[in-house]
Amino acid sequence: MQLLAYLFAYPLLWVISILPFRLLYIFSDFVYVLTYYVIGYRKKTVRENLRLALPHLSDKQRLSIEKKSFRHMCDMFLEMIKTMSISETEMNRRFQFTNFEVYQNLEKKQKSIAIMCAHYASYEWVISMNNRITYEGFAIYKRIANKYFDKLIRDIRSKFKANLITTKETIPVIKENAKNNILGLYGFASDQSPKISSVFHWQKFMGIEVPVHTGAEMLSKKYDMNVLFLKVKKVKRGYYEASFEHVYENVPSIPDYEITDAFLKMVEQQIHEAPEFYLWTHKRWKHKR
Image 1 (cartoon, rainbow, N blue to C red):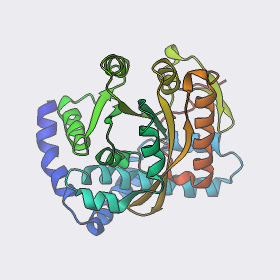
Image 2 (tube, rainbow, N blue to C red):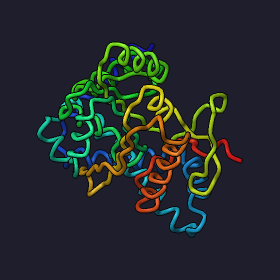
Image 3 (tube, rainbow, N blue to C red):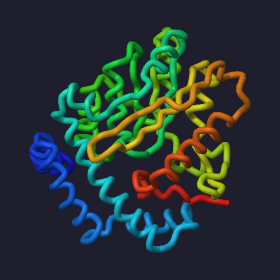
Image 4 (cartoon, rainbow, N blue to C red):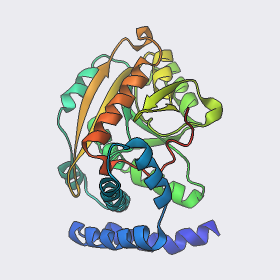
């Protein structure tokens, strides 16, 4: 059944990937109407998240953000499909780094690097930086249930030299690389809710005390990796800018959770600046005190 679903969907995905961007976004508008008005995909979750995180806004303001966030989500999903056929030149034109020298200077320290970012703007296209680094790049992701679609996602991202590792593979891969003196760049999207059974730290996020992921910080401490925070900004439809906002060196000496808490503050700042570009469909506040 999984294979049949894949064989049915793949030709459609390929056709979508070769659409010119102008037609891609016309199709995205159609997908938005279908997703938001017909299916109502996770609309209740998004509405509740906005109510909890942005209580100072009026219902009308939150509704406007809700609709814009669905439009952006549809754009981002189709942009991910577009990655199947996009050229490196076109990707670099649409996803630009404003201060890549910050990362390059950190490579000179000859330590592995952990990059922390949020599910904000275009976290999918961050993989384009792998064509510009000398370290081995690893992106941590959650495995897709359908093994054929999972392989497709791996193939898409490996086009930009990104090695995908699942959450379960993360510790063994980092441990093995450290043992073999392989310098790696590890990407962590650490703003979503962890499993309650593996919670070590609670902190306020958008004014609500919630459990938070601490894996990026703790692994960086254990394996003496430097840490970077990456902020992605949507300039206009189909165009993004990424900036390295904070750098942490000598990570093992930094008090526990200081890096994680600083990261959450950075994500909050992004959300307050333009909340419509955050991924509100996840149940981020399902566990709270």
